[in-house]
Image (cartoon, rainbow, N blue to C red; front, side, top):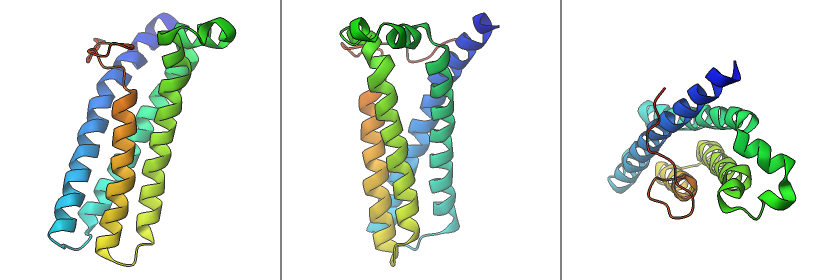
Length: 158
């Protein structure tokens, strides 16, 4: 069973990252535009907040599944003293997962803090700061195919 589920989840995780990045970017552009034009916070904006957070959480669940199933992370956990000194294994065993959890926390804090904002301007500002921070953290922690530190393909097949 593991021979089939692991590659499937890995491909889904690889593909879903693009959905997360697109929705997060659309949200940030929308929030920036609305703040600049001093437009009200609408149900569409709330939908974007929820969609962004949910899509990131789906990615996080896929990532947690991979963490449990991956031979790389299993090696990291079982041989920590040695593996922590191996760049690619440490990246997947510790750095990537930690940074993505921090990015998810930023999105959650932004969504929650924006609910209590007293003005539209303040609400958009909070969302721009926290969602922007989450995007920067995620972008810096994705194993891009062009990364000299640890690279993976942009798209994996099923």
